[in-house]
Length: 616
Image (cartoon, rainbow, N blue to C red; front, side, top):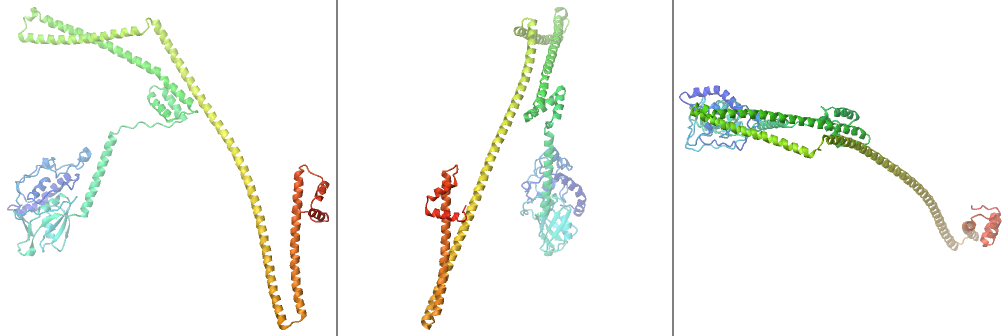
């Protein structure tokens, strides 16, 4: 809105904007904006005034005082305040939180007026018409869509109009009478939305190409969303860092680290256990070592010495307890003496008040003085009675303690001395008993270890015997396998011999067939052609020779078979004879026995006698 000098007011506005923008940016820099809370309707006539009031600034062209005071708008708001104090982020657009005033009442209507620029004039829309609609505001929106521009509008004119709302970083104009404008800050978008609905006229022209109704709306740009996400991540990192610092600050200090057991550390710990000032620290280390299971046969004596040195502090602690009890008795005695002195002074004060109430002095006091003296006397008597009751209670307790001591203790001091001596002897015997018990446990541990070693040796011997048996069985298995291999080789040889004999038989049969065919052929030729008798004789001789050769071969084979049968028979007879005579026999006896057998055996023996080879 402008007054008579509207152009001058608009031109002076950019000079005042930077300071206000910086203050608003400081206030909005550290606030996490929620898109659900930014759905502020700007369709009503008071949208621009409400947005400017939220920022603590006077609306563009509106004369008058600022609607919100500086104390409410907090221009110097620190963006890191919520991170340091642990306060949750506050949305400045929410009314009633202190940073932003509540919106003005609906009955107060803001009237838009004409805005004059150098190159154009902006006329507001009819207030009776509905306000222009806008889409939902995207998070981190810095870009606006401007539609309805005049056809002859240039980027310079657009920049002249919208640079009043704030610093413009980019203008992307289209050929279809619309453009996108990106501002430097988010709050500048609210100022640009205020111009939605205005009719722009270039100069004083009435041409349609020089006029148009502006429609300004939120635009969704990737750059804006990326910057908003970066800010959100940065705030999340700051929040995590702040929480971590707070947790580290509130975390209780960790206990000191306990060193691992070693002989050197054990020696140092034994020295610390002897020192009264370092005993509490050393005893915790000793306890942790024992709980970890560091005690074994090698370190048992060392741990026993440390336990014994820890036990030596029992007498010291009992002496300290006795000294503290003595100090407490002395303090009780001092308290009783002080209470007695206070009670005597109370008695003197009460005596003074009683003397003042007597007739000699009482008549000379005024009525008010008598009243005060009477009040003081009653109060002092009450206090004296309370102190005397407390003192009597202390004395009763002492009498009861003395009676208990008389009933519990021996009637004479000699008995007390005897009891103390017996207690000392019992304590010494207890220590000796403990040491003997520790030694017995050590011996038991040694015996158990020896038993375990003996069992291990016995197990090793059993394992050795089992290994020897396994080796012997493996050797026997290997021998049996070799025997099987030799038998298989013999069987294969016999099979090969059998195959050779079959081949020879088949060969001879084939020769016989061939000869028979030749013989048939020759007979046919003789019958047909009438060959001489000599040719027939030659053929008969050839056939007889072949047949004789085959017979000789068969006879040799049979003789070899008989020879092998006789040898086998002889070997079997001799082996049975030796088996029957395990202690041996004379050759003549064996010869006479063999002569009594079958003639085959006798002929074989004669053959051997004549010079044949003995099969063995």
